[in-house]
Length: 468
Image (tube, rainbow, N blue to C red):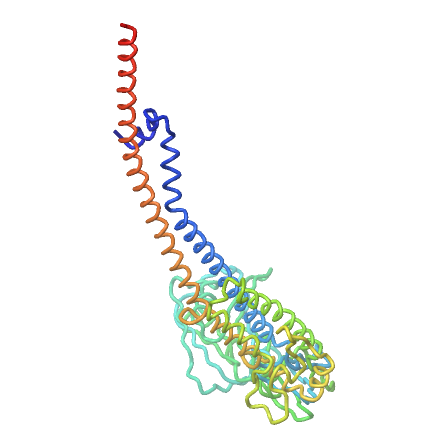
């Protein structure tokens, strides 16, 4: 008889609810084991959740600070008195303290732009096939005609125009596909379509373009009669503190150390002051935000490692994270700083309170910002100072071999083992339930037989008594 059938008939002989009795006995047998496994599973779930939360929190904290310092807003920025003439941008790692210069933009750099005579057939006008030869150098232009050209040191470049590109539009595409330092386009108006060729800026980037065979009608240069030079290749001309210099581009690096100058317009006779603005307000705000965020993170880690009820009270990685956070204010962030100059958070007015949280001495911070601006900026520099220190803490805390990453893996593994133990207990429970059900079924059958015999005897006795 199947176990299910046995369970349904149990108690019919004895009158005892054997099914309930078996269930109660089985559950009582494994109650302590199940309770212990459930408690262990719940504790591991809480640890896994808290480890994940701490990993994400410390990583997000470090990433946010890195993004802020990478943006450059916490470093002294160059300023321009006339951004419509020239703009100034700080370069990574620049020290702009004391920057004071004067720039005059006398001429902008530009590239040569030349166009062919219009073709009435439009962009689909058939030109022919062959080779275009491009030569770079310096040129003299009078009006729209190139009157002189001196080739540069680079060898001429060949551009092949095949049958698939034998139209005016095809030639433009062939030039662009060759990627030889000029770009071509088609300009169409009522007169027809023109091939327009533009080179890079700088006096040495003037060019001649000569074609073989039918392509000669697209020639640009001294001997060309069917093309015009609309824009002359020239260098930018500017002065720094009165000294004239030339650059091939309008974006200038190296003229002022740590600054990129972008020339916007020529303004002969206008001296533009280039100075520097310290990020005092930005650093003050960053310090405030850092301390507020640190306090939230510290509070979370401290609660997680609380010796009485913290889910990670026995986790070495979580405890190490708390220890590192506690030591941040005194950690040397500028190992190369001069003696008696700020090199740690504590030196700029960020102090640790009795409960471990941080506070800001705004007066101290203001004094240090005035007296040691370079040190404070270095503390908040990209990939250095505080940013590096916090990134190292986050990296160590989330490490998969020794940090919270390893803890998480261990807890997940332990939880899998608990799940396996639960499966074993469940199997043992069913085995015991089946065995006890069969035993009680046999007992119930015997009781039923005894009751049947008893009923027969009682009937016999009544019959005998009735016979008297």
